[in-house]
Length: 250
Image (cartoon, rainbow, N blue to C red; front, side):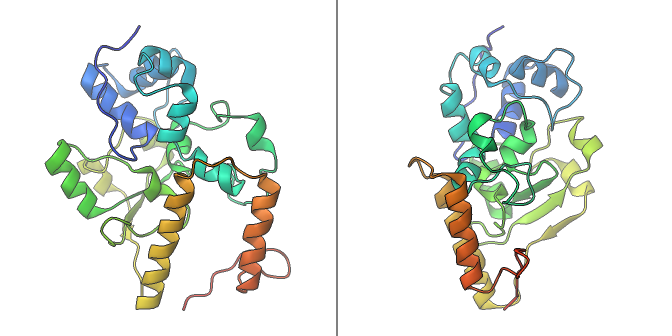
């Protein structure tokens, strides 16, 4: 089937968030059934970790959001991880190696939430963005740039993000958006800073991550990018003799 109603993709909106809005625009029934329609797996039992087939997604949306590559680059966090040489499902930057290049666009290895946020259980949003989105669009949505590793500040408002951990069982049942009352059921915290200097550093880090996400230049080999990152951290004293990254609060 091809879907008749395609909602506008909002600025920096993730694939997960877009799928939730497509469901609402087309009245597709349950959230799990929606994932089955959008991503091609019959009797899909998961939402957050739904298997993603982007060929099916492009077919049922009539390429309304672009080709498969365009969908990956505009709605997932893969461009960020491609540039830094890491896989979204890896906790360590030393694990991935050349794995990314041979598994583009990660549809076979990462579920819907992993492609959208990097880590499926961790979600962040800016309270001011949420209020503005509700006023302008009638709904709040997940922004890719706010889900990137190390990002704790909204680059639009300079406000610290709120972070929530959603349990596995819950994220498989329904789509969850920042304006959902149920999101408050889970343990959440506002990323906070104890000094003006650390606040500035967090903002600069968020800007850097956002720039990497939107960088359209060809990525350099992952081994090179990882070496540059580790060397830079070593110069600043953030890498131990064993090669582990550490953070020293100011």
